[in-house]
Length: 112
Image (cartoon, rainbow, N blue to C red; front, side, top):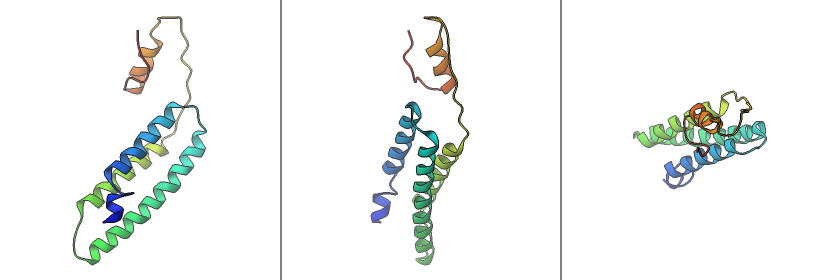
């Protein structure tokens, strides 16, 4: 129960997702960050496996654990995606920021 309220809580996963999103926006060594995330996700998977085992042994089923596993698998799949670096060049007021926002699917940059 302590793990469910701490490192396995919904807010903990949301913090991890926010952290990854912020890191993608900054100029960091992506491979190093992905490696660190993969190490952390493996630890989470081990904890979830242990919780599932305990849950099976006590004859109960906790939907929250399945939800956590699904969230972690989604984050891991996103982290494992191949990334590409692109350069957007254009004149002033040519719509570069608008194009980048459309390309990413959310308002990453302010537009005029």
